[in-house]
Amino acid sequence: MNNFIVSLNNKKRIITILNSNNVCIDNFTFDVDLAKVNEYLYLLKVNNKVYEITTTKLKNEKYNFLLDGNNFETTVRTALKEKAVEYLKNKESLVHHDEVVAPMPGLIISFKKKVGDKVKIGDSLLTLEAMKMENDLRSPASGIIKSVHFNEGQNVEKGAVILIIG
Image (tube, rainbow, N blue to C red):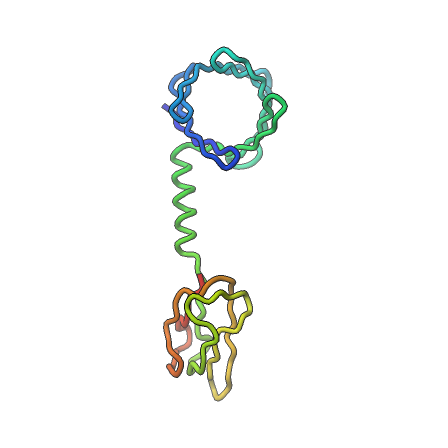
């Protein structure tokens, strides 16, 4: 059995090829027959009804289908590939954050933002005193401040993670 995940209009369908004449789509079984007319044109018979389908491979797993005058863009993946894509999406979302690090050793004078505050790129986050000069540290990314690792009045070493934006 071959399992595929087909995404169409933001809905995922599980398609299982049972044999050369039967497919299962979301637990419904259909009698099918597919005949290739040329490189792009196919005749698809589903439960005794014939459809003319024109298909074009776009990129990666994306295909364009023209069926009865309606145009559809789909993504077709094996079940294993779909699991891998979902895993990578989840992994990226778990580790996506930006760290604000001390560019030099110094003393944290004041924080202008706190945990939970929304920030945009370039927003002033804190003042760090180093070599008797006050330095304004700004946000490297837009997001929400997830954690602050130091308090006002604390010394930090160069490279220390002061806060995290997620």
